[in-house]
Image (tube, rainbow, N blue to C red):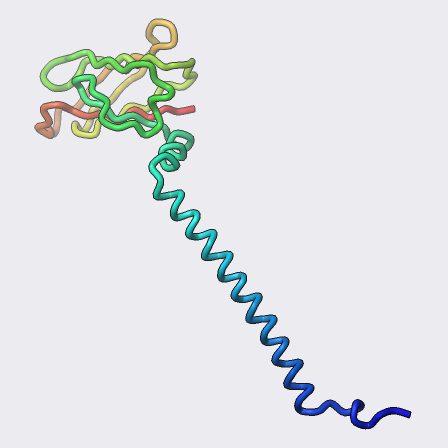
Length: 157
């Protein structure tokens, strides 16, 4: 013999089941939001750290910015691959040659681009040992007026 009270759901039992389901969904949504916020804050904190940015730059596109007076202006992760950079003066402010001595063998010539003098080209050739020697040519149409031209040397691996 069945109990007629338990056979038909009451408004109260339906409300309790609905409230518990809504509570579970709310807890899951809150937990998901909390985890997402935590991960986002950790990523933003890591990207604000200069050491992390330098490590990423050195693995993605390592480069060095230097000028015609042999001064290193910025290390974008490239100095770990380079022992020295020597600029050989040429006519005016444009260097004749740049000697790049890598720390280890570079099978592909580093990419050299001028930041101040438009139209300058560097044709790379091998020097002594593992050295690369880009010969600087061009750059006669527009003069930037830079007294000390800057260059960006990207290491291609």
